[in-house]
Image 1 (cartoon, helix red, strand yellow):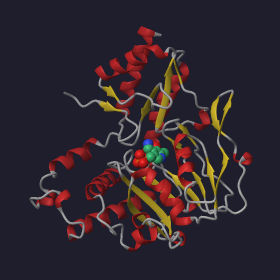
Image 2 (tube, protein in one colour; image 1 turned 45 degrees about the vertical axis):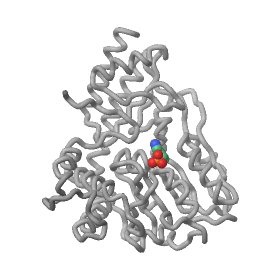
Image 3 (cartoon, protein in one colour; image 1 turned 90 degrees about the vertical axis):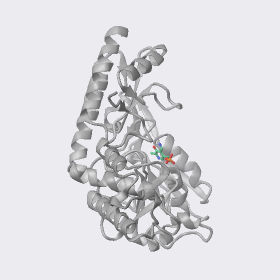
Length: 362
Ligand code: PMP
C-alpha cells in the first residue's frame, strides 16, 4: 500500500525520510543496542545529540546569541500560561491581538495570571473576505508587560504576514503552526514559542525562544518546570525532558538543513499555497473565506458550495489517498494543512482530486 498524503493540522505528517531513519534506529540508537527512549538524558551521547539539535535550530532560524532556546513541556497551550507566568505580574496589563481561535484561548489563559488582558483588536469582515483589523486601529494599552499575537491561526487559516511595527513592549508570538516555514527576523521578538506537532515533531513538546533580558522575572508562584530562567540554567533538563520528542525534532532539523533551510521551505510553501488558493478562487464550487492578504500558507480552509457533500468529499478523498482534510470542529468545511513535510506532489494530488470532484458534483 502506498502511503497516503496526510493533510492533518496536527499532529501532522512528518518528513518520510525522518520517519524512515527513526524506524531504522528505533531499537538500537547509534548502534548501542538500546533505543534512544531508553537512554538517560544525562548520558553524554544524548547530551551531545540534544545540544546539536539546539545548534541546528539556532542555525536554521538564525537565532541571535542573546536568546535562549528552551525545549519545554506541554505543547502550545503550556506556553499560553508560561508566558504570563514568566514575564508579567498579577498587577500588570498585557496586550493581545485576537485574530482567531488560538489567540482567543491564549487571551483566556493569560487572564488567570494578570490584572488585565487588553484585546487590542481582532478580525473584521470586508468585501474581499475576513481580514485582521489594521494596526492603526489597534487599541494598545499604556504600559503593557508584553504584546502577544499568533501570526498563523491554524483553525481559521488567517495569517498576519508582517511583524507588527512600533510596539514598544516585548513582542511575543505563537508560531505553533508556522515556525520554520519561512525566514523570520527573530531579533524583533521578545519570545517566540511553538508547540512541536506541526513543523517540528511529536506533540506535547514545545520550543520557546526567549530573549535574555526577559529571564529572571517570574512571579513567586511560577510553576518551576515552566520557569524559563530555571530551564535556561538547566539546559531544559530541570526535570526529565521528553527525550524521544527532542531526538525526533533533531532529526527534523537535520532534514531541514539538508533541504536548504527556511529559505527553500519558504519558496516551496508559497508555491504550494498559491496552487491551492488560485484554484479555489477560480472555481465556483469551492471557496475560501479569508481576504487574500491574510491567507495562511500553512492551513488552507475551504468550503464546498453544498455542505451536504462534505461527507462524500472526505470519503472519496480518503479512497484517493488524501486524508486529514476535515475542517476543525469549530468551523466545519475542509482544511488542507500543508506544512514543511507536505511535498508539492501531495498538493498536486489534492488539486487533481478537487477538480475531479467538482466535475462530478459541481
Ligand atoms: N497555538 C496554535 C496556533 C495551535 O495551532 C495550537 C494547536 N493546534 C495550539 C496553540 C495549542 O497547542 P497544543 O495542543 O500543543 O497545546
